[in-house]
Length: 444
Image 1 (cartoon, rainbow, N blue to C red):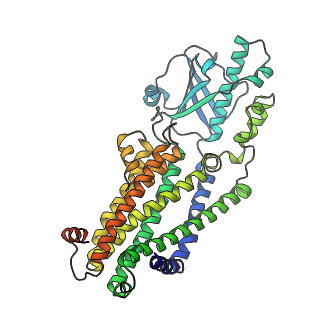
Image 2: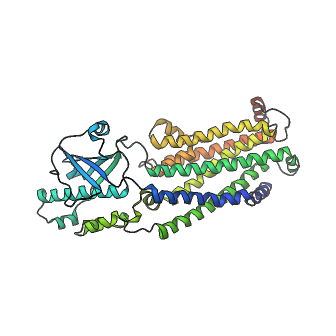
Image 3: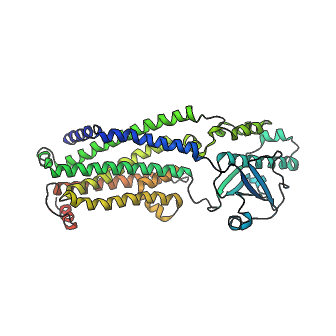
């Protein structure tokens, strides 16, 4: 183990002193911050004027929804049921941006649905919910209580309005949180690919210039392999920590200096919105700069501590799994050009992993998504997506099962790679064939 640590220290120093390591440590997080800034600035923009059709077959709202006109929203009433497919496809509804369903059950279950063609901004969602909720309060006060409107608003239950895509009414596709998990998965595989290729180049370089013959005179092949993987892996973790530090500071400065959290809806209690001056608060809220949906996502809805913890665990396990593959490939190739063709299948597998994450975004409960969740080749990115979306109650154990499977697979891959490394690192001038791999795997 002492020899492995010495090799790891040598590899670590060599990596962190390279120009590419230093540049990527700063250019990478700065690029992420630049993209985040653009999303914060422009990502929450949507149509500023909306036309909403209200399907009210029972006449519950009596063709009225707000006392004062709002120039940003134009409501139209239809005194009949409107099927979602009809609203989506019928020519007469193409001019409307959203469908608001109204039925008598909303008075008891406090749940309503709005189906949109293009996802509205947080401002627009807040306005529609506010107008609808205010109108329902007036109806309930008139029909069910003797309280004044002001007193009723102090004790009423908030209305839950679910906004859904008219092309995905069952809400089977993931929301923005799922894309955050997908981004984390992409980062994992970017690091794995970059440092996996570093392992491959390091092994092939030492093999081609015969330095490995000198090294193997002092250390065992397995010690050399393990030391190389640990050293390069520590460099990858250091680079990732630099990313976290720079991105964390950047997000903090953005929030404090560029996108201050002014009148954020999350900071206003239902009691505050229910008071007599609620209209003024709501008007200011709609004009607040902090209502961009991406700002809300980053600062309110992502559990960074949980995400980063599992990110590191799955990155380490995934790194050793794929790193062993890259090392085995580098040690068994007869020449540098001979081994390049075998890099392509590894790259295909990495892209398959990214596709698996994308697939699980839209079909989270599909059987294939469940397979991807546990398959060691794809689990790092799929678990990140699933974790960001949230595991169902009682199913949190799945993430630990996936992690254990990946760790056991990494150990198995290290054992296989060490045998290939031992028997192939001193072989030269051959064309890499499957029979060579099988022969070296059998040889102790």
